[in-house]
Image 1 (spheres, rainbow, N blue to C red):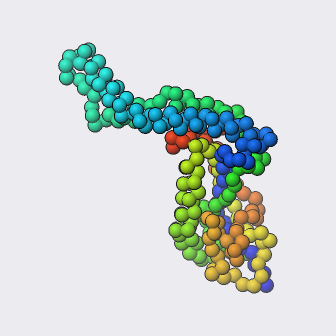
Image 2: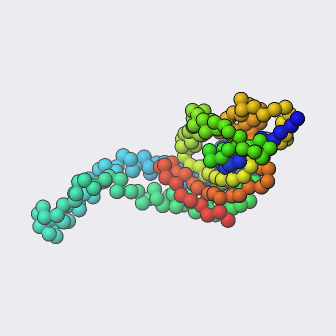
Image 3: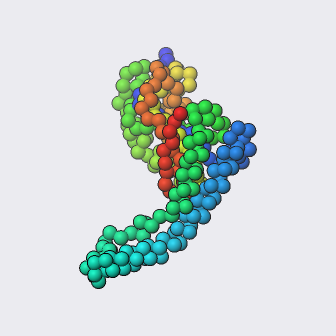
Length: 240
């Protein structure tokens, strides 16, 4: 007797591009990573300078504003409201310019061919929790949400993000597809058992085989490309 287990839900494909020894020496895009590293190094320095100077710069700006108000309207008639003043209102123009340079370089370099063929990038996939398990096309009552709510699922995701956030820059392509996903080989021998349904590296598995092979095609409903900077901001890239 054989049967087929599928996850009827969403899967997210993720590909991350960042500077490594392999990508920097790549035949076609090595120079891109080197140029991005140079720009990111400047960006990191400008960010440090902004952090050191922002409080002083904000005080200068506020004092100057209050002085200008007093000279125009009379002493203490109008003043800057301390409740709404924030030192983050002071930005670094040169820092923003450097981010624009990085964005422009990435936009110029990245196209559909690069996304698919750049072999130095890190790739992985995860299941998302809006779905259910089916056996031979019939829904099965499971506690699958417990697997998504588990510490292992969240910790693995968070560890990936924390690793990326330590980088000076990275570009991430995420594509979410909906469909029915089976294990490699499809059919299993014997009888279905919930005990053999588990979660590993954010993927549902049956008998240790991840349910990631589309059974009947998929529908793409999210396709995003973003660049992340060292100052914890990000920007979207157009996909061409």
